Length: 118
Image (tube, rainbow, N blue to C red; front, side, top):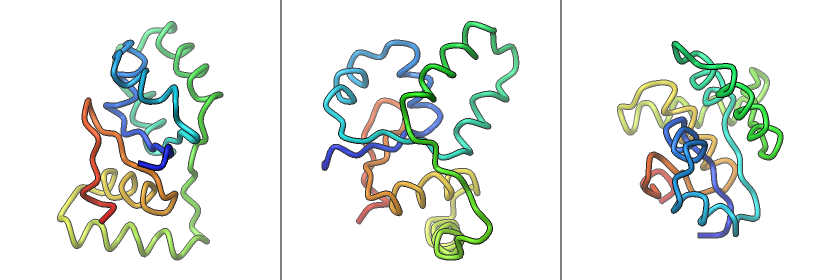
């Protein structure tokens, strides 16, 4: 691992919930990011409290949010290839392609996933 981490939605939930292992891992990170799809997924959860929204806003101010731009044809092609090659849902393909493009380790749930980085 190179100290660069991209978080999936479930990793953000675990982190904001105080998951000790994730907190410890990210303390030594040189870069942490989330794709904009993660922000959308998190904020669209039903019954999200104002406290949850406020905590997410603090978190978001401390990480880089990777946007999805229609003019970034390389990124769009990477997403399409991820979806086709791994038969995954579009949000997951966006997240995986973002990790690859950022040269980051994808953190999902409580585990570190390198399967898309090889």
